[in-house]
Image (cartoon, rainbow, N blue to C red; front, side, top):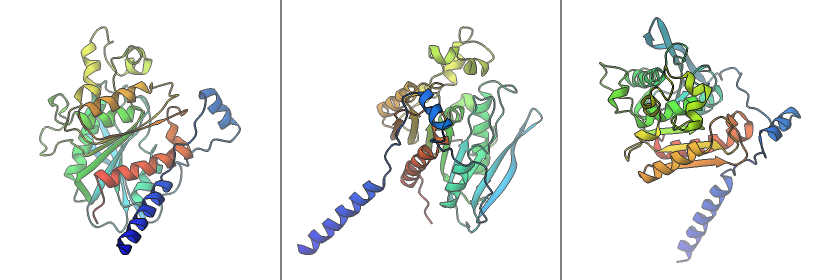
Length: 319
């Protein structure tokens, strides 16, 4: 009995220690004005996203995964040099209102998670000046399928894949996660693989483009050939919420309460619907943080901790 009590005490101590290590949500700001003032006076540190790739990381640059309308769409892949066995794949999708951005925008995540043993990838896709919705969705799905087809070459475990994105990239990640079997979004006709993934991480992505705010926003309007009044159906078809079903992948959400581009209620509704259908969901609703909040050191560190916990739970590295 005494040995049992000692073991129990040690177990409880380990649990408490683990709980103490989990970071609390970083303190936010009253509004975007106070945040900008803090940044102006050097009190808000941004992550370094311009640094050399560590020597222990291999980078495959500008791999063409699709050529369409005379445009080569490219992706990059990162992994440890000594990685010889398949590992889970983390696919990062940059934001920029579907009209700008660069696949290097998430370099901090790409390198940090490659160091942990994951295979990481980042994808370029066509912008709305080249093709309107759902072209961007189809491009990302094509990239997922290409990565599955070439899994052996890059040590990818094709059965353990997560898509991660912020803002417009979050929207695209959600669309991949929830519409993988929808015939409206079949991107590769002759592949034996689908675009289905096993986990989704969404940073402040729009989830319903049919709301009055969303459909009237200049960014959303620019993503479609027609206005909402002319063709409301296409706005619904490009929204993640309608596709949610009970067999969708676990989802991790991050959103700030003072986001003045994508209202936080977009993520509130996403969490509610996922719970309704019994889809595992974890939601970090960060008080006093704006759009692109993970560009700050505090939020990035916090987010990476919970992303790592999420990946370990749903797509763990097995070797």
